[in-house]
Amino acid sequence: MKAVLLILLAIFQNNSDERVLDIYAKNKSDKRYLEQIKILAADQKGLKIRDLKIKEHFGSPAFKITLTGKDGGVKLTSKSVLTLEKLYGTIDAMPMRKAEMLRLP
Image 1 (cartoon, one colour):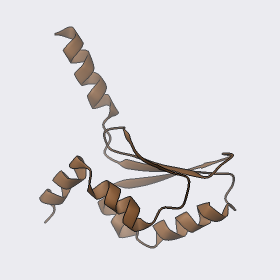
Image 2 (cartoon, rainbow, N blue to C red):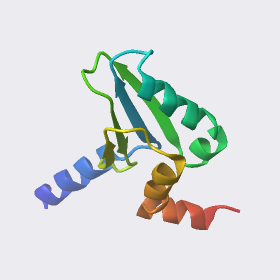
Image 3 (cartoon, rainbow, N blue to C red):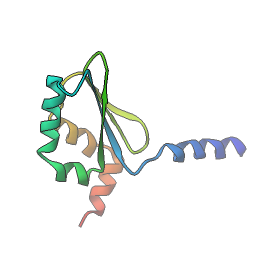
Image 4 (cartoon, helix red, strand yellow):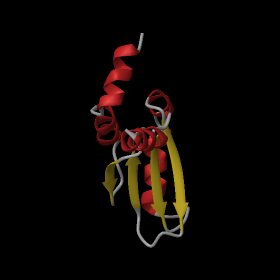
């Protein structure tokens, strides 16, 4: 019983109210970073309804993007710029997101 409680506690501690898109780049002048930010900035509403938080990390030797779900699991990793179609397609296929869409008015 104690083991089950510990597992449940670990699961619930990893849950978040937001999905996180981590963008790793050498610096703010990185061409792919700038392109990705431009793509994301074009649809703030879409990011907001998907509870997506953007985190920028500079000093990385290579450009990389990771998408982390509300459950704390990495759902997507890319070494190239993501289109909104790819990003939203990945998010909208997640079980938690499907449940959220059913609750939307």
